[in-house]
Image (cartoon, rainbow, N blue to C red):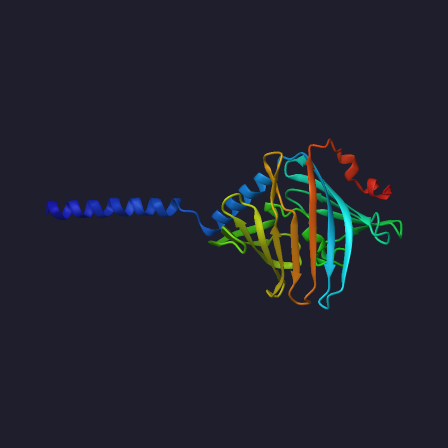
Length: 265
């Protein structure tokens, strides 16, 4: 009888420990959110940043075009930020500019300045899924992908598309989007974005973004020098090359307003 009692007590203790372990284990959603949050935190804290870049467009038939631009960002606290991209060359697109305001807890705002028409066009919720100046990047792709705009689900840890090990996470938009989900690869070493697969509203694999050429700036901030977006439906592609990131330039938020767009020269 004593032996039976001891066995019952031991079994009960094992169940308690197993139950405690299961309750403490992360779910796929919890792990996905934790990794996405940490990756976002590592990218932040830059105050402001500026960079020059070029956009290379290529059609499925091999025709190509090149554009050059300046881009800048400023952090405003509490997850809010603003960005401004201004084309400088060639002449037919010069001073065309995209202004983006990022908010926590509500939808972002975007405006496009068209110098030929001397007007600023607000990009509506449905318009954000449209092509940005004829490229394979949508307007929504040009905005920071804030953690609170998605539900996250960790899928697996596996080899990165290039080299090294990656966390694979599905992020499902919680605000209006042209995508039903995005599958992202972030490396386990630094949580840097390596690849994004975009799925349209019907669930078809629409586009793939490959990110490469990372460099560390100011001893802390990892930034990519190349982004390649391929459209699997049309065969067209767009490459963004980024060069010469600078930080803490003393930029003012007044330079990231709609009125500033209208004064673009």
